[in-house]
Length: 115
Image (tube, rainbow, N blue to C red; front, top):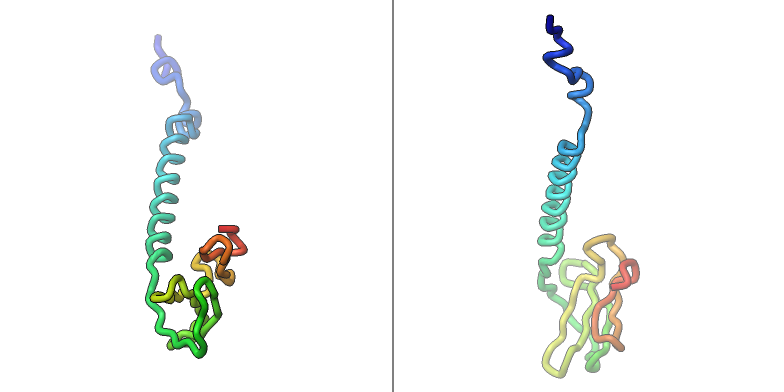
């Protein structure tokens, strides 16, 4: 005579535990959600908005100076060549660290990220 244990050799409690297939499925879904969140956050942070600034004194090529934008935000203005001056918000969009101009490398750098 067959019993229920013969027909169903796996107990209900063992069926509910997290096996390798379920774990990998959950881990894969979590990785996709994290990647989608990073992508969405990066899109917002990477969008540069123009700043309206007024320089009180001229800048030499390669020189940078902290200035105030028209909306009150602190910005960093840099003269790239004789015809162009760029200004970006001084605050890093990731952690809010003050961004500096590295003249020897001709780029803005965040001291918190070393980038």
